[in-house]
Image (cartoon, rainbow, N blue to C red; front, side, top):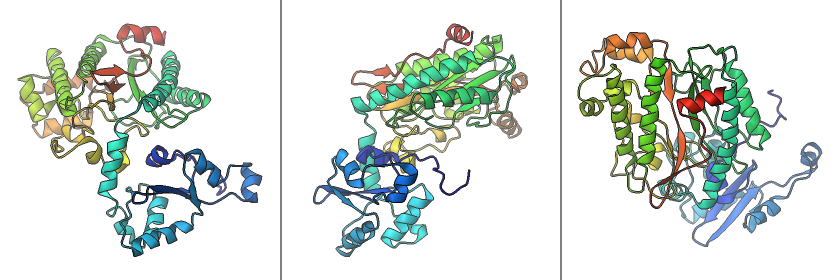
Length: 429
């Protein structure tokens, strides 16, 4: 697998895809905003490439297909940038997140490795975020193509969720369907009966009756727009009474949050509304106590709901994450909180038409976190720690859908994937 000629999985940089649309490695793109031109830099194929990889279109042909008229060999990029620097022109670049890109910028601009990320352009970041945050109709259609594949992935996964299966069998079926439909998974799937581990990518457990299975997965369309869906199902299809109590709280919280999505709504307010719904539900089943608003104000609910309500979705599942969460989900009017739980909120600012968001509340019972908070005497006025001992092997519940903010409200994207207890029972069979 480490043979040098093997083609490692390549995923084009999302901003390069957005602005240039070429889905192959070894290319650089330059936009000259002063003279209104753009250029592609890349090396032409030679006979060795043709022997091993077949005939490929030239760089010029690929550039012309996306409306770019100027092309140059890749090694010409350094001279082109040197000319710009000699004329004291500003050279803007996005923060690199891959080592090879960082090294390339270091050599092209003659700067130290330590200066590369710090030297990325805040102006260019803000300009890219301003464009990519608002999805066109064509982009939404691509997301829904990804969701069509994801629907089939979940239909297969739910039908397999029976005692005796292994998590890896379900992951294999989901990834195979994404491949068979011409795409890839949008991120490494999370499929786990240890659902209290939020980003669990280990797949070795055997499914057992009485356990909850959390599946968080999505596909990419052929143009690399992603989807991100989470469902929590009981192995075998039947919730226990305790599981259903917790599941119903999360489902109610998610449905309320979706209904509140509209232009002008601050996503931070939706998160706090959802937190209050969760805290009130946990109070109803005897796991929390005291004033619900005060409990959320002090962050007691984050013992059970430690992550944010959702994030933007597009060419990246956590859209534009490489440009910095604060640049994407926050602005000067909404600073990031330092409170546990709320600090993990990826998106806080006002929603506007064209935003595509995930809505994914959850409730988890994380033994190490519960023990830590109890030992530190945290939230004693709000948490019934004595009642939590029965939930040591419960795991967690998360439910997630993808939502478009419209001019007047919102639209749920994709076909409805089962999430009511009755629909889940039918899907599992």
